[in-house]
Length: 309
Ligand code: ADP
Ligand code: MG
Image (tube, rainbow, N blue to C red):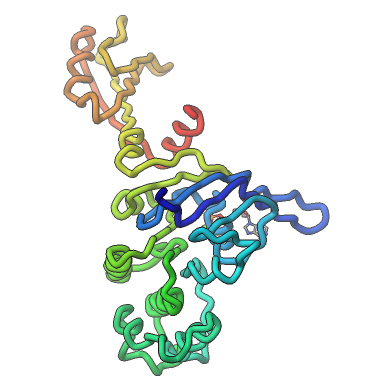
């Protein structure tokens, strides 16, 4: 049996805010498995619960209920082993300003009990492109360099699983590409990668498998290829020359009238081409005055997925 990197059963987190404030149900009984060896994307809008999930994995947030198994180790019963299997690059910069990159890596290695002989700070510094800044104070590093150092810190104990929480939010293209190069290399060498993002395109680009999380619930989980197939919803809005009597009808196309006289056609771009849609429109005797198409954006995708599941 192929073992999972991560197994979540009924994972629940309720933040209890101050007096008079409502509770926040950040995770609602999430069941999720993440296979070993994958690049797995946790995709969802701001506030969906991504960081909460990641921070529970990292041991930074205490879960309210449920079971977390990391690399086969139950987080409650084997806290040390489960912690050793995972390295997390957090969303927020949290570096000690007085540590140099080399010192930050050494201290982190110490925290994880990595013996001096097994440390590889110089290799990490080279990999994250900070060799020439090894002895500079963290506070003198640019934001991008600090993020790279956070990646380095996540790697000191050679974890089987590397988790990156919104690694590219607000970073420039150069850093983004460097991160993806690092991520691909590490994955090739056998590290399971989990990353969160609210960019659909980013998840498409780099992830083998994706879970979409919304309001603390997993609303879809599939291979990227399969998921994209479900995300190819398009709509075309036709403004006819004169009011349309008949609606276009063709397989794969759903047509409806809009109050302003426009005709709205919904279809899936992998099955139906825009040309076929236009043909159906002409077939219904409609002369087109104006036409507009829409791609489903992430918001539509969430709506579609939550209503269809
Ligand atoms: P994401 O990372 O997907 O943007 P988060 O996990 O950060 O989502 O947040 C999920 C929900 O939990 C949000 O409604 C957020 O406001 C709330 N939340 C996060 N951290 C805390 C906290 N420490 N106390 C109270 N509420 C929190
Ligand atoms: Mg977050």
